[in-house]
Length: 369
Image (cartoon, rainbow, N blue to C red):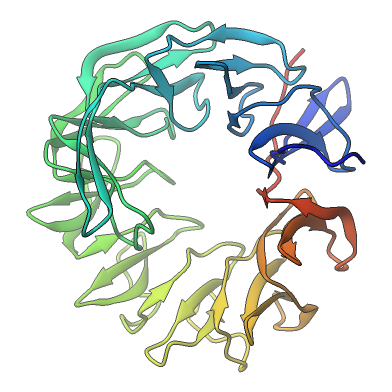
């Protein structure tokens, strides 16, 4: 395959008339495009920037503005040149913002603080912005968390429990921009499994979609519920709870990953990583320098500065050969070798040779025809 000036492997599964189409997002020499899992061009166009496909569409940068395309590369509509887009379509709406923002910079902390109006566009390009939001989340379970009156902070390496805004108040709206919960919280996460983490009086708790407090505001920070379990932080250490606020583990970890596929990566006070199951039991005795979440039965682990993969039984199934790895998705994982990214299968064999400057996970998407 010809070396391409830049590529994005953004993967999506398209189920149309029984046909599955897989695309991927990668970067090479500052240009981006979409290719199949065999490494072939899926859309014969290059883009300066691009996002993943979701709900049949992706946003790409062409000339001086963001455009929304379908999986054939056809432009569905173009955003105004003063508009930026954040994330992807969710619930048929995509967050957008006005790029003519006011901002300030803290050079000591490398923090850029923005005040820029946010809103949403639908799949026909219609703008929804009844209120000038300081920040919005993608829709999740029919609701979006929105901030009124605050600022957006661009912070490199946001830590677990960190939050991208300051000031203002957070509430929740539905797809018609009706406030289901008026702005009242200091911070808010998206809804997941019927609950959302919100902050009040500098403590985090969980509410349901009626605004009722389900788990009291007693935590220093909190994450999304996944498979009935969420990470929370208390007295400077992380642990896990269930929806009844029962502790799955003690608050003893200095870092962690979310529970996914029945396991979670945890970092102990000595600085080593390992995995626990939903009972808090360690699944392997070996300690690692870093670890990622399980996806499709495998998780990335680091030892002696190199990454490999482990299965749920604690067996190392792909040796420590790579400089970086991403999660498995659609049977492939992006890995970095010799300074370049490619894709391997679950046997560790190369499926797409390493020739990219950057590569992302495969994404699954349903496209209707």
